[in-house]
Image (cartoon, rainbow, N blue to C red):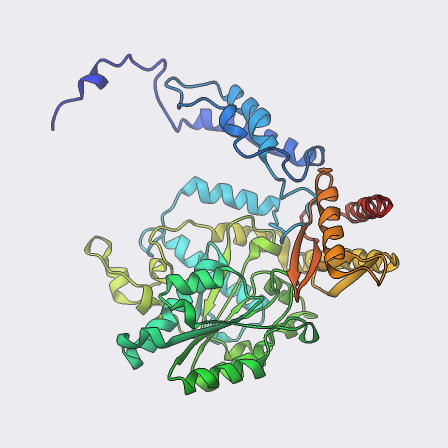
Length: 500
């Protein structure tokens, strides 16, 4: 067996018996941590929403090496407050209106505790049958909430999987589409494959295309306009595809978006699917943000035509209270995905998998290992029900409408693009004769002035050459009073800037 290294043999014995998972020690520490977390949620408004530290701040506060001896749990928690908290941007703050929200809930937190408790590595059915089968059930539940056709459900001819992010969902479906196409045209023609999106498609799309081996010159980012609400034009898509065909290229993949990052624009799914189907291109709908809203009947029309797409993904962590990370991906023909991503090493072979009667989720994703994250959504759906989730979304939309009305009521400000879902894009524009560069500088200063207070955090974007501020409602703890207070702060800072 070999002998112990002399350095280990001469090391002094530990101070106490080492038992890293003593149930009673766990019970004590977990109770302390739950109290710590609950107190954080109660007092979260006392913290600046946007961290005020400078780059490199933490290295000066912690030791250069890991401790050789164990340190008291109480001291570690104290250091979280003293050293970690100042470097946190508080995404759960009710005054967080930046990016898109990362929503949370008690049920999801408890579900995450269960997920961590079991620590199941559910790469195939046998590794944890419940982990695989619950995910299949939850994916079908969500599909029914969205009124997806049976072709996307395990109870029909399709199925779904929980990825970590939209990036992974797009990459996996791109690889599936690529391999399907190369079977027809031959791998020697991979450089002829072309993919399509808009100039509003998420930046991760280009990264995924490159990872999938798409030549950068064949990644089409089609321009959008204000007149179309910055949505991808089906007519333009057809025109560009025809031009590519005339050049001897091969249309591979179209990415439509339901709720773009900049302005929550919605691409016309049905019309884009018609074009994609006509040319044999795989069409994926990235509904990371807006898709969750489609569980409400008044928003479901945005998914019209979904029966004609090949895949659809949405991120429940953005609006369905599930905590990070969770991206649900449905595919119409799982066999294409599994063929592209499947592996079958000897050490993972088993009767259940070889029988073809089970789902092995390792073959639906990039990696092998995976967490039991469906527990989170299962607890959310069972604890709250569809009705409460619908009301949660409607409440956020109502608050966004309130903010939109406040902006419209002040002649110094303007709505730049129509509000969609719970995102309001606006800017300070006090007089019509100010040139565009001055307006942009004014709004950059306004954003800095608001965020530097620590009382509110917003972000910006540039669309159609226009710099605008984004106010995204959706943090779980946000109430009407927070929206009103944020607007008052924006007004005050705007007034101060105009007085200079």
